[in-house]
Length: 364
Image (cartoon, rainbow, N blue to C red):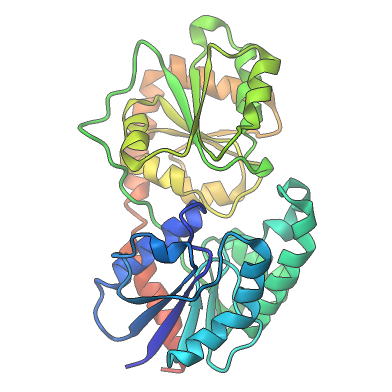
């Protein structure tokens, strides 16, 4: 039985969407049989977390996933050694980076090429060149590269020069939010929900700056979750005078976030660029309408089940929020379309296609 070493150095409990991907993918892989044996190579932080979702033994590599320098060295040079020590036949690196060289085939999931396509929107410019260097090495070593959207597949081919025949397109799926009861939008206090990290490409500040363009009777409240520590958006709220209209929340439990999904009027994703959108899928799964940037990757996710906006135009963002508050019939249509759209994505399909990529990498 082939043994797959899963590179979990980036799994530390603080990485959001990539951790959701690893967790939900391998939870489903565990349901699909015993063709492979799996061993998880955990970071020192991740080893302390619950890993009951992983379909095999999880070992502590002693490598920190939070210290960027130790983590980077571990990804490039230590993961492959740990995999060999544990008798692995294949390595899967699910968080974009992986070994620079390995004695067994490697499959790397590359979620996006944002450091290449839009380096000006990255939070830490000093890391741009090192990350690009690591992505180049990982892709060169990989037997197969998985990615999650057609946009990302095209950009991997363009920037990393990986032949399309070596890239497998495997879209993500949503995880049903923890909602207690049926959707019950707040009629007295309509609000737009936005959730995600504070990286510049997410464009949360434009949501706040668009609010003053709306008259109070058609202006929704805005709830933005997902920050760690001091929230840089607080200064934007003060600058615009929207303190009574904007609520900034930190990292929430699944139950707290589920309650927001249940009560929100609409979910907003005004990003300039992205690799996918799990929050949009999860919103559609529970009948929460979505308003999305008019960019190709969001059309891949949402199809016709979204209100689309120009992320570079405050007027466009404001007009879309106005529609959400003043046109309940349109929201009902979007909710129904979203449920149908979300049904096209499933972790079962994601897991099945991923396992097929493992077989191809192993020449089976």
